[in-house]
Length: 104
Image 1 (cartoon, rainbow, N blue to C red):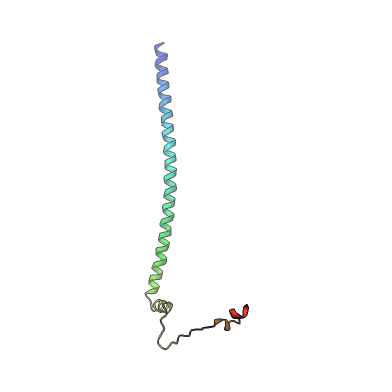
Image 2 (cartoon, one colour):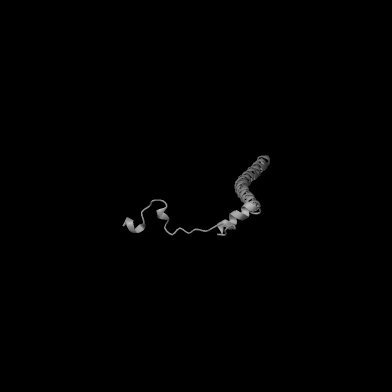
């Protein structure tokens, strides 16, 4: 009888150890999946930052050239020597669109 009881205790202990090990393994697998998803998100964010950095570097390199300086100066409203600024007060005349008063 003593041998059967010991065997029962050993089998029960082995079952409990196996069950606890499986629960821990299952929990760790879930945590690994979460960390892998976070890693993918971080890699995507890093890729987006690298792309933006590359775009800004290209823009900075362009703005360092004479053409880039000219383009930015014209966007700010500066004129080259000899250029004349025209301000059209009634652009609808240029495009054959009726004036706002005529439409009513």
